[in-house]
Amino acid sequence: MEFIADLHIHSKYSRATSSQMELEPLNQWAKIKGIQVLGSGDFTHPIWLADLIKKLEPAEPGLFVLKNAEEDFKNKTRFLLTSEISCIYKKNGRVRKIHIVFLAPSFEGATKINKDLVSAGGNLKSDGRPILGLDAKKLVEIVLNAEPEAFVIPAHIYTPWFSLFGSRSGFNSLEECFEEYSKYIYAAETGLSSDPAMSWRNSSLDKIAFVSSSDAHSPSKLGREATVFDTELSYEAIIQALKEKDPKKFLYTLEFYPEEGKYHNDGHRECGVCLSPEESRKYNNLCPVCGRPLTIGVLNRAAELSDRPIGFAPEKAAPFKSIIPLQEIIAESLGVGPSSKKVNLAYHQMIKDFGSEFAILLKYSIDSLSKTPWTRIAEGIKKMRSGDVSIAPGYDGVFGKIRIFSDQEKNNCVFQKTLF
Image 1 (spheres, one colour):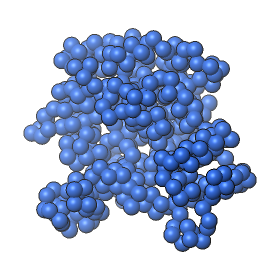
Image 2 (image 1 turned 90 degrees about the vertical axis):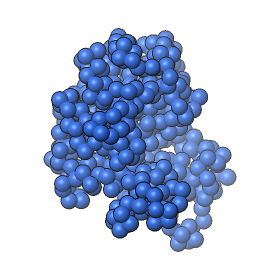
Image 3 (image 1 turned 120 degrees about the vertical axis):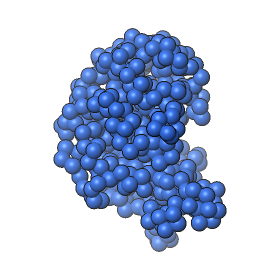
């Protein structure tokens, strides 16, 4: 069975998240997006874990569904228990800040992980994504000793401030970070500002799978990145597909255009400076306006760790597709902002017409989309699929700005306003 999974999200108990990050809205938005398996997020938070235990019931092994949901059981969103820890600690003379996602196959396993993290001094009540003063290696040891079937995924691995390879607080290799526990790392999350191709250049990472997830802080952001499988629905089948990197089971990932991510290029937000790696080297990695250190972005950092040329693709590497959220395509097609009422109306009407966002972005032919009132939007989807877009890259916490239609195309076409 082919399905889309989004395994890294948060609950309303994490900082800077929407109050709507509860199970019922998440279940609803997973349907809108076309996500069949959704991470629970934040099971380390005691109140959220209690909610999960109260509101979810077992489905297939290691997967759960929302009790009393109106859909047929077959069509219910499957939830898989996930959480994220922020490890902040000192190692080899530097402060390290590493975000790690881990998956658990049962409430018993999740509860045991939480108990052992508390015994190790962790304050799990502080935040849905708690900050622990644990070495990342020690965290993996605690998690796997508590639940041997748990699965560990370093999150958004190149983000400058909080990641495995981050330019400001990360390491240069899996082994430097996790030491003898690196053999238990079978997958890593690329993050919004990179795609798998940037990691394929690093031969030391050939042994791991590259997954993508939304890291959503609000329900409408689910699925902005995701991973596509073709397995039976079960925790074990998903984990096995990643461990084996089986191309018949771990099919592909859905990626932001990495330039749109807010840490893709180097830069200095305060001065409005955005630089390519080549330009940064010219300025000795210092801001040309104020002279302070630049925030070295994902593109530069991934290249620094690489030992292969641009364009190299290892055998068995899972392919990927770059996508743009449907709301953004509609907004540009209508010539309005993405949060406007017109976009919201058009978005939900399209979902009603075609079933889900991913069905629209990935499955329906452009001809079938064009035979509806959505001709201009269909043209935007066609350009997205072909990569015919232009992007001002993101940098130092500023999202990139993606453009689907050129100025000439906008001038030559009347923006679609059929329904408005």
